[in-house]
Image (cartoon, rainbow, N blue to C red; front, side):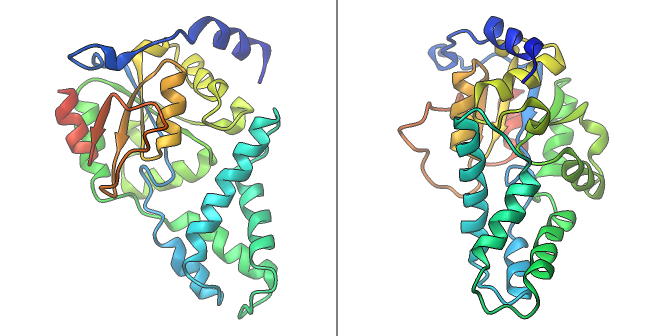
Length: 246
């Protein structure tokens, strides 16, 4: 992270208890969206594993491992791209698996799966509804901006987003506070004027600790882990989030 970003972090991450207000967080000026699994439907990735002869359920553990290794690098003040970690993790995870093609071809096929993912069914209408509230919309992904760009182009919603940000430019993966500070700096917004929208409790917790309001998008109906900071809002869809903010 550059010196300017570090200085912004030092000045802009107060201790904020959004949930202390009985009315919840105020209407944010900026919504920051996570991308992978929050907006993109990653369930088709299982089919790409099956296509190369690997068990379909490997997709879930592989993605969790990619996040784990990205977090591990961040914890020692290092970083690498999502694509590189994902491909290297595949090489390790598929080693010794009886594939129906060569290892490198299998890795390429699975990685190419990101280029055809859809958004979740609620995303197009939800993004339009949130945009209609006059709130600025951006993304902050641990993945690449180009993947988000193609995802939104396919869904016809790219024009609703002011910019697509990636932690690759921040130098630290979420949930490190520097990642959120980078997004705030790029958008010229203070933490108390921003809200993160994410399906991942670890991302929700990280943003809350960085001073942002948070909305946890619960797509599975499961419980929120008690060891993480509770979200300010809980929602089952982006349209529901728009209704709550309205």
